[in-house]
Amino acid sequence: MDNNVTRYNVQLYIYDLSKGMARNLSPIMLGKHTAIVAYGEEFFFGGEGISSCPPGGTMLGPPDTVVELGETEVSEEIFMDYLSSLGENTYRGDRYRLFEHNCNTFTNEVAQFMTGRSIPSYITDLPSEVLSTPFGQILRPILDSIHIAPPGGNVINGGRNM
Image (cartoon, rainbow, N blue to C red; front, side):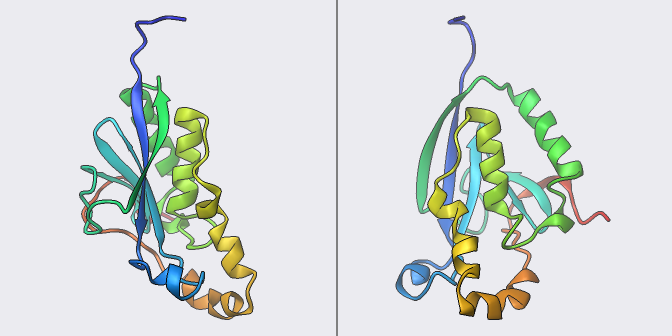
């Protein structure tokens, strides 16, 4: 193994959008936004596509939880090429869907690419748990129309192309 390989720390930022209400009321309060932090930037997916900002730099402020995902040998240049590719098709802003294709599916895919690890299952399983309830099925048409895009980021690629 080459000891001269540069390694970069990778973190998962978790934001509780409900500010604790989801825990106290019901799982229907989807309240979890996630982002990947690497190379001194925070990367996330929302209704505008893939965006970045300084860590904690959106209007959401600092994260509620930080999970250390490990290290990666992926260089920043390769990572940015990877994000650009994702933003051209898979993670364009118009592809955002609150339940099936959201910030959490993005961070899970990026975490696996960078570290080989998934994000915690309590985050990735939440949409199916909500949709399995009668209340979730009633609210689904309304919730499907929601596009979350935390203000404060710079769109890397993706916008709302058709």
